[in-house]
Image (cartoon, rainbow, N blue to C red; front, top):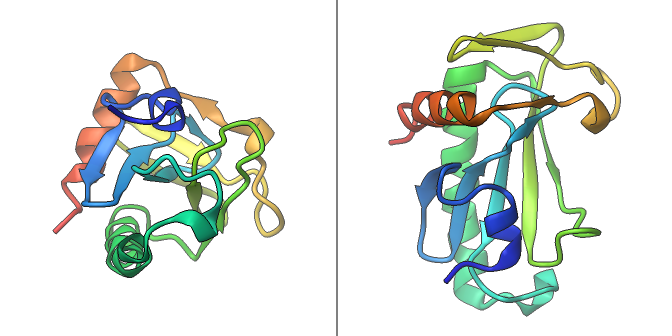
Length: 143
């Protein structure tokens, strides 16, 4: 059973990749095209409470994320946000950042915050069909 943070971010419909300790999920609200959530599968509510193996695996997870998003989005920077104010279980938001807009899976999404903070309040909310389309499109970039 997955923790409530994972479920809130649309699992299983948003699942991009399943690792031993982490899930990569499509973020249903897209402040930039290809925005993801890296969610720990554990019940840990503090980053330091994750098992050592989760920290070790995080290196390969972030490498895969950055490789896939570089190919799909051609981002200029990537921001990892660990906010955990509303959703209590350990997770990061991985936001590819770019000047202008990017296109993919039938969507065009600008980076409204570039070059400053991500404009989370200007995110495009995906409907069910768009979640499926963008998820499948991004899965094609995973090794």
